[in-house]
Amino acid sequence: MSEPVTPLLPSETGQELAVAEPEINAALLQRIIEAALFTTQEPLSLAELRRLSDTPLENRQIEEWLQQIAARHADSGIELTRVASGWRFRARPELQDYLDRLNPQKTPRYSRAVMETLAIIAYRQPVTRGDIEEIRGVAVSAQILKTLEGRGWIEVVGTRDTPGKPELFATTRQLLDDLNLRSLGELPALEEMGSLLDQSGQARD
Image (cartoon, rainbow, N blue to C red):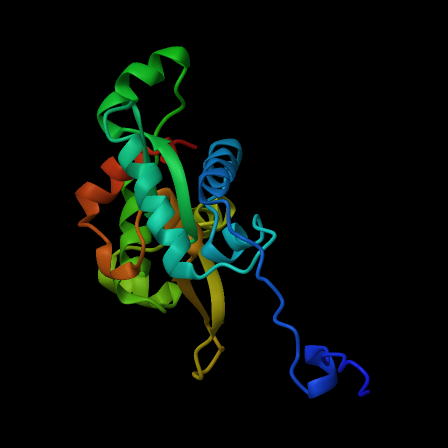
C-alpha cells in the first residue's frame, strides 16, 4: 500500500508565495493631504505629500486627489493653488480687501525703484548691478538689492567673467511662490507684479 503523497508547498517547488500589497485607503489619504495643506504655511511638493502615505504612491494619483480636493473647495472662500514649490491653500484674491480689515495697520509698500529692479532681474536674469543701472538709467543703491535679498526674492547665483567679477543676481523660487506662479514663464508685467504681491500680502516691507 503506497503512502499518501504530501503536496509540496509553493516555496518548495521554487515558486515564491505572492505577497499581498497593502490596500490604499484613498479617502483617508485625501483627508491627510488636505489636513497637511491646511496646517502648513509653506507649499508642499509631491515628494513631501508622498511621505504622508504608508504605501508607495504615484504622482499621478496624488495629483488626481489634489484636483478632487480643489473641486470640493470651488465654492468656498479659499482655493487650492499650485505654485513653484508645490501646492497650498490661500484666500481667494477677491476677498483679500476684506481680510485686510483684520490688520488695518499697513506699512508703506515698496517703492517703484525696488519693483523696477525686481522686474529687471526677473525678466533679464542673471544680471549684474551694472546691467540694472544701464537699463534703468540711474544708479541702483545697495539698499535696494539688500531689501530684495532680505525678502528672499533674489539671490546671487555667480559672478560674471569680466574684470571685477561682478555678482550675478537672479530671482528665487520664493518669489514665484509669493506671486502664486508655477514658473518664470508666467511672470506678469511690472504693474501686475506689484498687484499680485499686494494680494499675497508680501509687497509690504
